[in-house]
Image 1 (cartoon, one colour):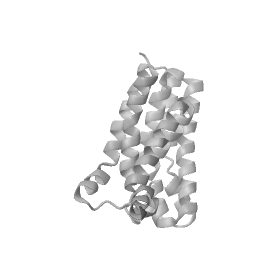
Image 2 (cartoon, one colour):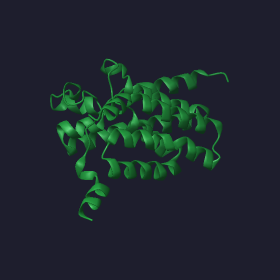
Image 3 (cartoon, one colour):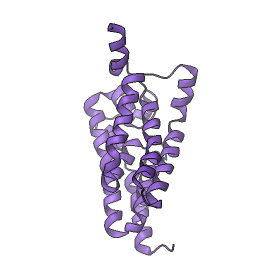
Length: 206
């Protein structure tokens, strides 16, 4: 499949949009680089842990928004390449050109792209994420397992090859970007949110 100048421009724009990191842009407004705090990751979870929920909410809105915008532009200007543009937005978030190629882990940007390209996947994705989170309290594990459910959902829906390839790619890529979380999980040193372990608290009271 040949690529036109318009498609190449859309793909480049998607990567550049992805490179606009919510945590780093908002952090500049308060003189903070969260890569120097907490886990050192420029994502929503570290933003929440180190800067509070208001800052983290702004970060998530920006990161979801840029994924949605990249997908929206691609659908209108180069629809054949829409999923490729979404993937490049996620790559831009992880390795941002504007921020020394040190970004976040890509989950929120992927969700933004799904809002535009594949909204029916959001409910099962969120369901898996919430279920794992309330059982284990591990955000990274919840994200990895939620992403891992995407290929199964794509196959169940009978999605086209581009959608299935995106689902498989995102599942593997998010497992890669969360590899340190998985390593800490194996060592028993991974941080978790005890307050959201509703299943554990229910069992403790039973």
